[in-house]
Length: 450
Image 1 (cartoon, rainbow, N blue to C red):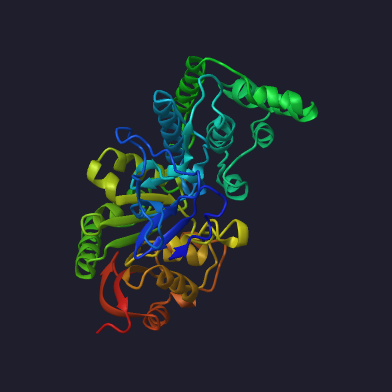
Image 2 (tube, helix red, strand yellow):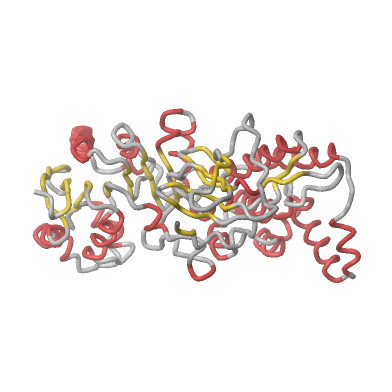
């Protein structure tokens, strides 16, 4: 039995692993109120006999991937917010409630926002405000407002602020003129002023706010209006820097066909269960990988690209179960965070796969990121033992454009040097030229496989 080091904060029950299954302990008096079976949006949970002692525990299927709010695009964060509000409304109808509303209780199973913390449900009193509404605003509404109104990506604040953005910080980022924009005055400024008044008053005043009694219909109305506000927020990044890359790159149609055939052939031979598409852009090859693999982790630093792929997958039920879009900058992947660096696992640990796709990426990392080819190959090998890698010559027009003002020495991108570095870490089993030989596709497997 192995406890998850990140589950210590909830005294009701810790997460542990036993014989390949995930459990959560039930301490004295902490038997959870499991979600009603007819309410969608919850990761299933069942009370069973404890696997190692004479007691009970809760078991849940293993999540394919746990992602965090600072790895979501605008549309993903919006859908996670809407899922939280919709679940709260459905629970209120049953006399239940979410006792917390943090983004860390939500993850994406494919392209579906799913609440997996089965201990986050409690009974709801006959009258009263939703206790977790303030946390919902800090975790979801505030980040969405600054993203929508100011085109400021809130993910860095979510990463450093335990998944929340305070009202005070939100107001500073929005600016005074934003008070006139929909939702800001009522949902950010007034709560901030109320918090300030309560903090300066006696504890009795704070207690009176916390125990304020209102009809449940009023609580439902507040949540419904908040849901409408979230739904109506404009996505400010409908078109990012790289969303039209596949339309403007130097490939001919014949090159694209060659590339697709090579990738599909390599993945078919590898037969991977999990594929990570690093630098997926809008997901053309992620969708191709989804025809072979059970799970595809599609990563790109451009949130608009991830939005494009995410929206497409949501519309296709088969893709929605297989493709996991994420905003990941390979030069700054999410690190291990929290107490003893164990509460939040680093991106590489969570994204480990059976095969990788690294297509039209390595020259960006080499030039824009300043990462030597040897380091890039080491990172790819950490993530997956095999895959498809695209080499791009220093003479390629895109490379020349990227390097025009940097004038870097790209000797490790020269083919002979590049191939030598590759063969130090992988076995090259197949290659093909595209773009008149200025690019090569390499099918790589672990060195010990012959």
